[in-house]
Image (cartoon, rainbow, N blue to C red; front, side, top):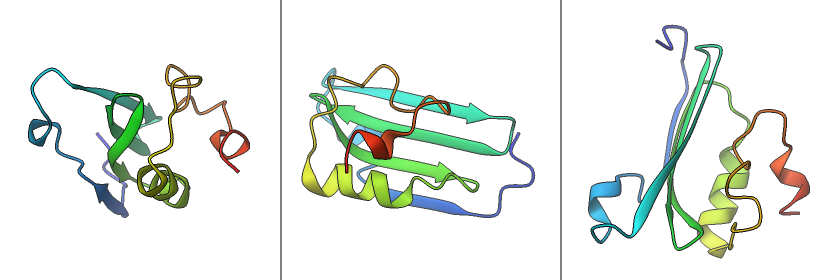
Length: 90
């Protein structure tokens, strides 16, 4: 899995076990074994992310974490590769 990945970006509190028990969920995406994205979401806010491969999501995830943006309205689809999440959070 992800044998060609060269870039690894860790943002915020990307380890869910650091969160209060039962208060978090993981949202993931894998694209063609080239990208892996895992976000830790607490109360509809991204608190951490692990990005492996060329995801082009670094700045967006950093802004979501730093601004404590509520993603409830797109939480189920915000990592879908067919959804441009920059459109939601500009």
